[in-house]
Length: 268
Image: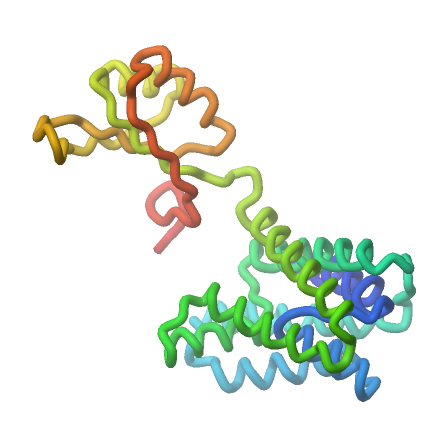
């Protein structure tokens, strides 16, 4: 999957980003800018920069992740290098190029992430920012990407940089979709005067387990059971229907779940 992700990722760069004079975020953005300014090979520059950062920031990664990162950097850089000479401009429409560049790069990176690899440089820099400045990894990656895109304005111009922002945004959304897939989960809290009936109906008709929490009303002081369940997004409509049929006055909150760790899901 890492190899296939590298192919998709390289097509986005060599067929849409570079031929249309766009850029990218993170380390690949720097390699694209180096190509525009010095005519250096994106594959070679991508490999050198990422491996340098792996050596500098190896202590911020687990050993298993280091192995995956090195393999990912090597394979993606090799594919990027191999497809440089066959890259061609498929469209003259800059907006279309930005859309497809973002989607292909995002899908490629998403496949790499789903297989356990990382994109190397940006991830390591984000972890270093977390260590020294207390930033979240997500915040660190976003800031690094925006700094690279902002710096590219001097080379590709403001219009192209704004198109690049579109590509980076679409890429981030594509990564989320590939990594989370259709298995995206939501957490639901249910407060109902008929909690036992709701509990019984969900466990029997949906074959889902729930957690029962003891709650107390802040105003009334009345004790109530609070039901907690994590389900697929596709099951929300069915869950709402069950709750509505039993208690139309039930209080329900729904939250996106970004990650689940534990037995039946994945190891901590």
